[in-house]
Length: 92
Image 1 (cartoon, rainbow, N blue to C red):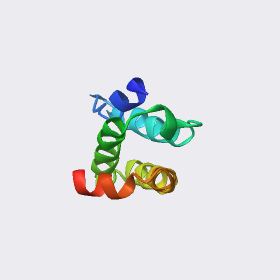
Image 2 (image 1 turned 180 degrees about the vertical axis):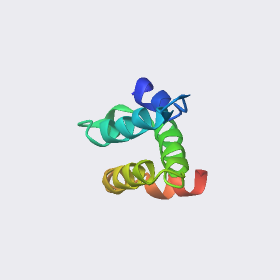
Image 3 (image 1 turned 90 degrees about the vertical axis):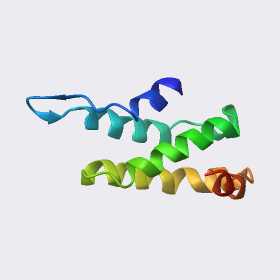
């Protein structure tokens, strides 16, 4: 989870441009496919993850925005099932 969380902040660039975007997209996809992710992490962890996802959801690159929004669409119902979405909304 820490690696996925850190990867969402990868903004590495080289002559090809924003190569960190590949990592950010992969981390979004990986996070949405983690089985039981909402049960193994605390609400504090999810607060940081959702905040970073929201940041990615307004990025310049469409592929990153799309990955972040797709991931949020998968995670929010899972978090809501735990009763956390209202708490997250007030904390963010």
